[in-house]
Amino acid sequence: MRIQKHPVMKIIEKEDVEFIFNDTKIIGKKGDSLASALWANGMKTLRQTEKENNSRGIYCGIGNCYDCRVYLQGSGMVRACITPIKSGMEFYSEDRGDMSS
Image (cartoon, rainbow, N blue to C red; front, side):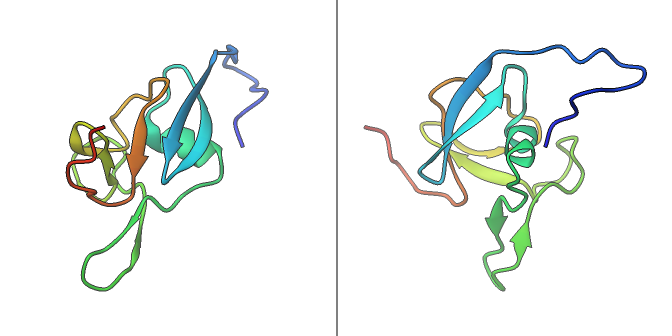
């Protein structure tokens, strides 16, 4: 689901980055935010709302809102749209408390 060819921009191939989202291994590209890596893999729902269990994904895309918040193991809650992925990171849709191992 990534742009492969563009009439104006040059598409630069980047190295793969493997991370985990909700116990599933996902492959993104170096420089991706969590939200963009998930979107490229067809995953648009990042979490469910606490009260009504409604789906939430990318809303503003620039870090101003908190609709895309997810839990990053070892760090706590982060905004997926502005959090760059790195190899081995583990993210979850909800706050899992202290999961350090």
